[in-house]
Amino acid sequence: MSLRYALLALLTVEPMTGYDLSKRFESSVAYVWHAPDSQIYPELRRMEKDGLLTGEEVPWGPRSTKTRYRITAAGTAAFREWMNTTLEYSRERDPVHLKAAYLEWAAPESAREQMKAHIAYHQLRREQWENMIGELQSGTNVMLRKRLEVTPDADRRRTTQFKIFTYEGLIARAETEIDWARRGLELIDLLDDES
Image (cartoon, rainbow, N blue to C red; front, side):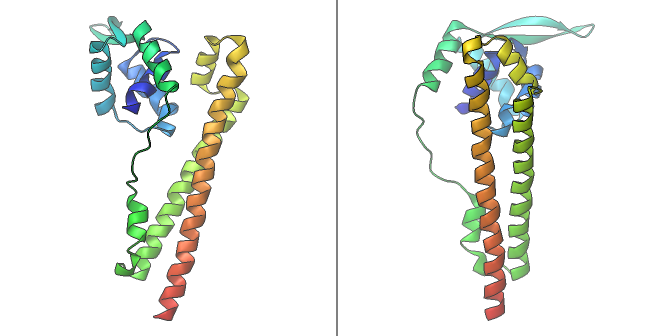
């Protein structure tokens, strides 16, 4: 259900086509909520059917059109309600930590490769999130600039700081996962030496 609210968040800035939303999604919301086009487009149609969006056909190239979506008052109200409701946490589904619990079944080298892959993944994500913070702080992030254009002056600092706060939390999580996987490598070596 969070995909719906991620799309509504983007549409609070300006009307966009599905194509525009997909591009903006990848450069902003996708850092905290992954969704491929195959999920975005059907959700936009459902949201329009539910009255959260209106769609209008706009020219696209010489002979075709695209649907541009605009958030409705009901969509804004639904987004505000979601933002003011405490989330219910879902149960964990974490394949890496599940696998780690049974690494005794893996060859030591395979276990090491899994931990190295985990480190590499989280180092990449940490770097991406650090770059995002840099864009937010410097004012070069396109979506933030557009959002600030429609944000009252009194709320601009809050708008920027909450986004930075979000990425700082993701960086902290990545650093924890990197440290955990490094400890895993040490444990694998220790236990391999004992056998």
